[in-house]
Image (cartoon, rainbow, N blue to C red; front, side, top):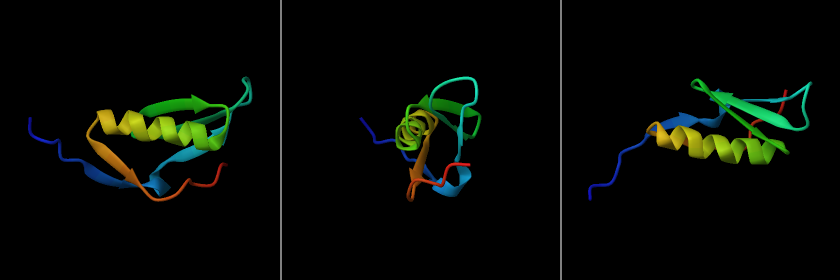
Length: 65
């Protein structure tokens, strides 16, 4: 099976913010929305979500807003 080629994305394109009506944080990037109890967990879930669409996130965790 041939390996899938991923397009690279910068982690600066990910927005991480605190949810007001729930407990935790959310990450938003390229029409993907993920939630987690911490900013790191929301970002890790975002990495998996964009990978399914053929993108690969590179870089460190962006600062929550």
